[in-house]
Image (cartoon, rainbow, N blue to C red; front, side, top):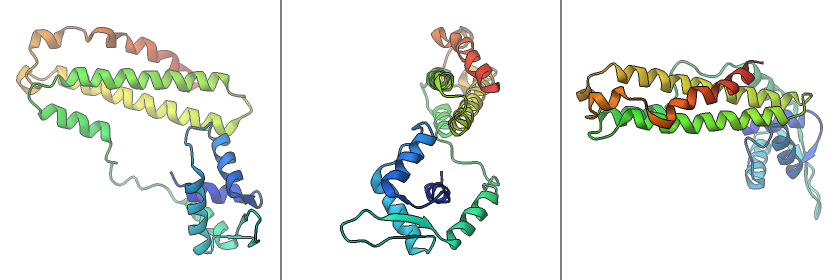
Length: 204
């Protein structure tokens, strides 16, 4: 996420203090992406050196920052530039599964279920957050919807990976006996029912 561009966007509303920018950023994202004050001021100083923001230099007073014409152009360019999708990101979960497949004695399907349960819990948390949010809070709604869709896509990938591993011979899946792999995965088999409300809520 581009913190610098988020701060520039907030400054299009008028000049603001660093602490004010931090508070407004967190409020508008439902505190999903917390910032510390040091991170905000470090970013503002970098933006000021680049000529994208300017501030009031007052002794003993808190500095107010405002966006410059260069900052407005930078923000407009960023908004209109699609993110780089030419190469897939190095997703940590995908790498973990790829590594586990090659490790002897590791039950890969059990690892998939561990991650699946955690993701379903996160989906439920965001569903509750969405239900409790003010319907007029569009910014928060967009953030929560994005996270629900993202988490759902990861759960679907885990399900696809589990189905792919289930079709492999036992020797190709870390030495798990076929009889073990044919049995349901215990409590994790209830996960699809748990995630259904979150998926339904995300589609609304």
